[in-house]
Image (cartoon, helix red, strand yellow):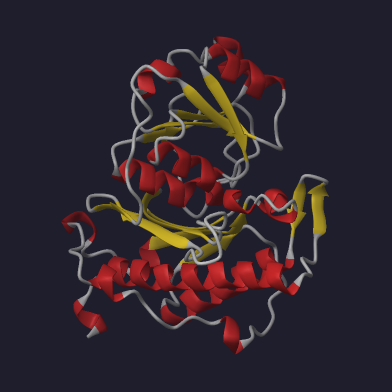
Length: 308
């Protein structure tokens, strides 16, 4: 019976099912062949039919079940009647079998803020770099990211026609993160992952200051955090405004749940209360291990240029 479970775990279980449906929508839009691309603010800031449909699906599905939630989505969409086939009413029962961390057991619906990025890595999606794409649902309490769901619609898409497409990673602080195999970069290797389509002098200078062995330039904040937890990169560095709260909320939880750390370039924790500005104006620095090694190498000139 649903009422025997805490609000947080019911929300995470529902968000898991909603994220899986979102992944199906993302794949269906590609399969139909009409991405419906529009430019928002510039040529690298795009919105597709998948962004629009997925946000409607996630926000409507969660709002129906949890009407007192605050839900903040990336896309500015007109309010309209949502097609019933976009609504996901299920919940993933495996999550409901997990214990809710005691510090969150009395949270009320109205205390939670949900940050939604319906399609993280939109530009890459339009260019066919499908493994860069994620769907992000982050859950915050008292300004802190405490639970997150990342769906990778095209996980396994290069593994042949018989491979199962897509996966969903989820985590709750104090419980753990699930749906992937945790792996670390070999000791002593410094592999930086950074932006593919939003680079500038600050970004390049900060990456160079790390004296990296290798630099990966990929799309999507969710994708970069997955690179950290799967041992493909040792630090995610983005010394620029541009990244928003819906980009970092869910990925931050997954990283923190396995002992990693995500902050701005100054080392400040990000805040996720509903009144906060959406832009992460002081950039992002994230690692699975050895956070201090990378934080200590951020040049003062870059810190001075990025005001929190």
